[in-house]
Image (cartoon, rainbow, N blue to C red; front, side, top):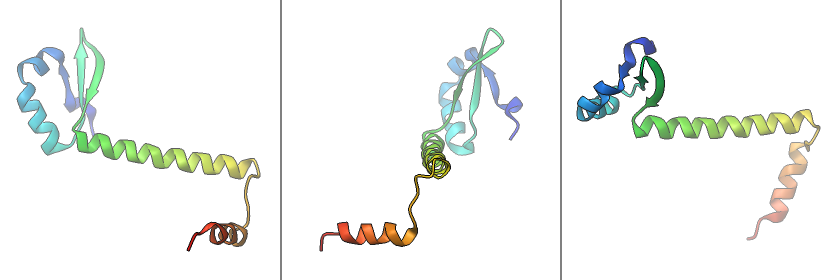
Length: 90
């Protein structure tokens, strides 16, 4: 995706807020807002934002798992399943 087509000054946002909100929902592409020629903010539709947050959460879990592997904090799958079965309340 080329962000260069999705850059607008804050004055455009102020003048076209309703249209921008509609386009964000339909196109699901973020919009970079500039102020005095500098990028100051990025806005996006809420569905895309939620997906991004879910992806970040999964990446954090993967990073934590990798760190635990590097630190040697692992157990064999057979042992882990045995522990889980022992904790299960029937």
